[in-house]
Image (cartoon, rainbow, N blue to C red):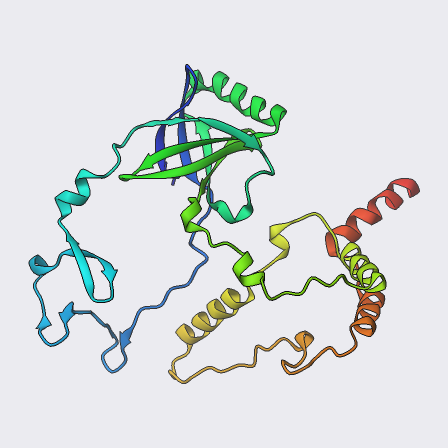
Length: 284
């Protein structure tokens, strides 16, 4: 089944318009969600909308409200909300370009793939992609989707483009409030060297397939085992990772711990493979 486009329209750069299609770059199929079930009957639990002191209410009596102070709401009608929705324009205008490393990762929200809509759009699409790549810039613009307006960034991604929605400034908390009590002392040079050595030994090119969600894997195995079980009894297994050690352990001697880690720390798998390849070529 072909993926369904999240958005169709055109990217505009000055007087140049490029028809494109935007597709989600992520999938939610790996997540596991639960429903609340009435155990004696095995049926799903439904929920009633109720008002404290009054009881269940009809759907027609429900309005949307925004809390401006505790227990004090401004009520809005559906047609009032509809009236302020952004017109569903099908044009994403690139209004600014910034350096690829100028945007704090905190602002990036969700990625999407961008492809030309047809063969006629391909030439202009490739020109934009390569111009962004050559200049090492990211294009910024605002895209209207389902009545709201999203701030987006566009950059090259292989043969295509990657569009990432960005959070607005008022959606991001400033980190300094959380870091204010951290002291300004400099680490001892030897400790810093040991920590850097440990990082270097475990450095390798990023490969997402090297990492597995062990909780989801274990949960799927449990669900499969429980579905095949006819007893209906609880299935409890110790899934603790012995390599992690006890929770109550405390590193008292940082220097000794770092030295031991550097001595025992094996290089990352992909790094080891990379290091082995020149030797193989030499022997050949």
